[in-house]
Image (cartoon, rainbow, N blue to C red):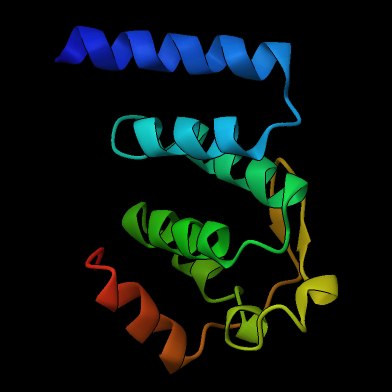
Length: 119
């Protein structure tokens, strides 16, 4: 099973090298890495958001990962952007290296994430 996982990760890395504009590749890369390499998974999900800022699930995945790796300061910055999605998307600024100028999460966002079974 571990060998299959390694092969999948290698294949996704190659796919991203060949076409870094595919959001799907970055999402799948995140899905494969979030448990074993949170830092690399974080960079991947941020790239996916940069490519498709209108996909709410990507922001939810980002919040889940940030909570998992105890980036409470970062989680506290991610806002009502999710709650008022997609109206506030222009106010959200994500770089590939760091998250900047985001707003605090509201209670409803926590409920959404909890319903997905990740907390």
